[in-house]
Image (tube, rainbow, N blue to C red; front, side, top):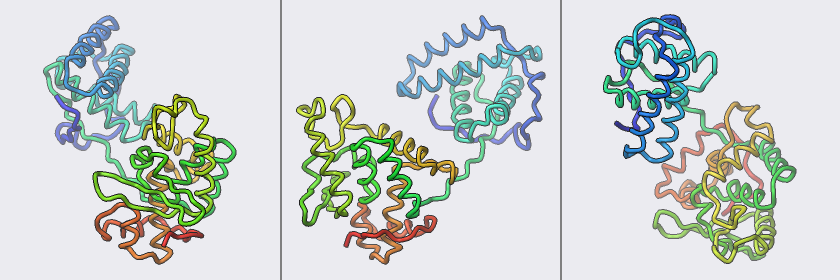
Length: 323
């Protein structure tokens, strides 16, 4: 058993969506589906999988079993007979792809859960190829997109949210580095304002802050003093309960604000903290900054790594580039 997805080319080779009709798939009785799910839940509880993975697998298999119980198909048993297993998984994959319009990554995640489920049933995974996933083209925000994002923050976000977006956009820190910042890491004096970032046990790096970001961060630090629970943590960015903000919360925040700004609808790609990091790196290179300096600011050991930010979709240079 394992979490790693298999890519198996076998009986499924050459099969296209729609070739497997649901009518040809063997169904199961609803009470049997419930019993099988209960037994699988017990197996998951005893497995070494992470809790989050167990929950995800349980949900995906519950959906598959409900689908099997929801139609009257052929007589072959999809839970005990390999040919019927393969036909059922192919048809379910086609259903996810067409009726539900699931993304390739979602379909592949379901197939991975089915691999685990059929290992549990001791007949082995279905012979199904994974959906091909096209890597999204790296991108950076151009100036108009940046203005729209910041406008969305002003209209629909808090001052904390604004400070987070400004920090990501104008320092290029990784989201894990952002949530690890303490108040003392934001040096917000009128002259030479900077962010001190320490990560992965390497020497701290200092990133200059443009005036706008400095002012927004100063406002947030002032408001933070009245935040509940601040006596328990030195974290710069806090959640509603006064604890250190999580990377997941920051991811969700940026995605939501990008959607509010209409940037996801325009590009078909979610706006994530990494897009803001790419924007920072791309604009530095586009403005003529030395790759060694870019690598230093972004926490890379080699300038060759920093040069990749020049390959993202074109964006105009920023108004202020840290020197």
